Image (cartoon, rainbow over all chains, first blue to last red; front, side):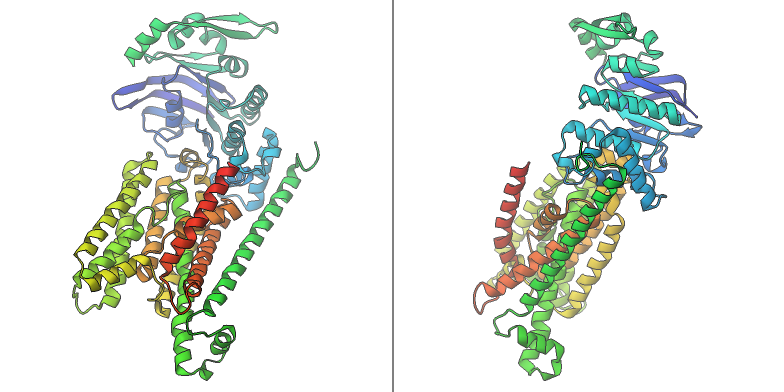
Length: 267
Length: 353
C-alpha cells in the first residue's frame, strides 16, 4: 500500500494555497510531517486528501482515488482529525467514541464495537477520561478523545491536523509514539500537520515543508530542514544543532520581519 | 491508582453499563411522571368530576349520564391525550433542531415555525376563503400546517445555501420570527373585533380544538418521526462533537440536517395546526432531557419527547387548576411556567460551567 500525490492544487477564490504538489510515492509505515507557516495550505492539503475539499490533481491510496471522494464513501480507510477540538458537550467521552466507532465500522456488532473502543482507550492511556463528560474535560483532554475517535476505525491513512496543539509535553510524546507505533506495526501511513519542528524531527521519517510562494521540499527530516529553507519557509533565522544524544534540534533565533512582508505580498 | 480512578478494559465496559442502567431508570421515572400527570389532568376540570368519577366512567362508559359522558370522553380524554402528544412532538422537534443546527436556542418557536403557523391560521380567520366547501374547521389547521411546513423548508433552503456558516441560520430564523410576527400584527390591526379575538385565541395556544381523530393524527406523525429519528441517533450523537468531526467520520451532515428539518416541519406543522402556538416546550424539553440524560441520542431523543409531554401535560393541568371554573389557554400557561423554569436551567448551567 502506498500514497500517491500528483499535481495536487487548490485555491480559495483567486488565492492559491497549493500549486501542483507532486510527491514521490509514500510507502506503508511512513510517518510524514507536513510543516510550513500559517496559511500555507497544510490543513487544506489534509482536508483535500480526506475528500472534504475540492482540489485539482490526483491523490490515491493503494490505487483508489482519494481526492474528491467524500468521507462517507471512503469507508474506514482514511481518518481525518480536524484542527478544531471536539465540542464541549454533555456527551461522555465513551459515548463519543462509540458514536465514532459506529460511524466508521457500521458492519461490526455491538460487542466488537465496544472492544474496539476499549482497545483504543487503553492504547492511548485515557481510561480515566472515558466516563467523563466532554464539557468537564480540558481542551487537551478533548483533543485526546478526538484522536481516539480518529483511530478507532483502524484506518490505513491517518490525516492529523495539529494533533498535539493543546497537549502538554508528556502527552505530545505519548501521542506521537502511539501514532508512530500504528504506522510501524499496522503499516499505516500518517500525515501530521504541526508547528513543532523538533517533534517532527524526532518522530517522523519524512518531512514535507511548504513555503509561502508554492515552493515545497520533501524528504528525510535531516535533509529538508536546513537554515536556508527555514528562512525561506518561515522567515526566521534558525540553527540546526546536534543534541547530546545525537538528535538534530532546531533552534529558532529571531524573525526576519522584512521577508515576512514580502511573503504576505506574494500571498 | 485504584480501580475507580483507572478502570481496566472490562471494568470500563462494566462501569458504562451502570451509566446505561441509570439512564434507563431515568427514562422510567420520566415515563411514570408523565403517566401521573396525565391521570391528574384527566381528573381535573371545572365540572368537578374527580378521580373516582373518571375512572368509573372510563371503565364502565354505559353507566355515565349524557353530560358526564361528553365531559369525560369528548373533552377530558382528548385534551389530556393531545397535551401529551403535542408536548412530545414539540420536545422531539426541539431536540433534533438543537442538535442539527448545533445551537441550544434553536426550537420550532424561536426560529419562527410557530409564528408561520399563526400567520396561516390568521389568514384563514381574516379572509374566510371558500375553497370547494372546505369548512374553516379543516381549512384552518391545513393553512397553519402549510405555513409551518413552508417556513421549515425555507430554513432548510437557507441552511443549504449557508453551508458551513450555520450559526447565521439561527439569526435568519429569529429575523423570520420577527417578520412573521409583524405580519400577524398587521392582520390583527386589519381584523374586525370578532376575527381579532379568534386570532388572539390562536396565538395563545389552546387544547380546546382537540378530538380523538386529531389526537390519532398527531400520534401517528410523532411515532413515525420518533422511529426515523432513532434510526439516525448515532449519527446525531456524532454531530454533537462538531460538524467537521462528524463529516470526517463519514456522516453525511447535509443529508442528516435535511432529514431532521423535514421531520421538524412535520412534527411542528401537525402539532401547531391543532393547538396553535405553544411556546417554550420545544426549547425547554430538550434542556431538561440533556440535564437528566446527557446527549447520547438513544436516550436524549425519547427523553426530550417525554420531558415535552410532561411539561405540556402539567401546563394543561395548571391551566384548569389555577383559576377555579376557568380553562386558561395552555400556551399562556407554558410561557408562565416555562420562562421561570428556563431561567433556572440557564442559571444552573451557568454555575456548573
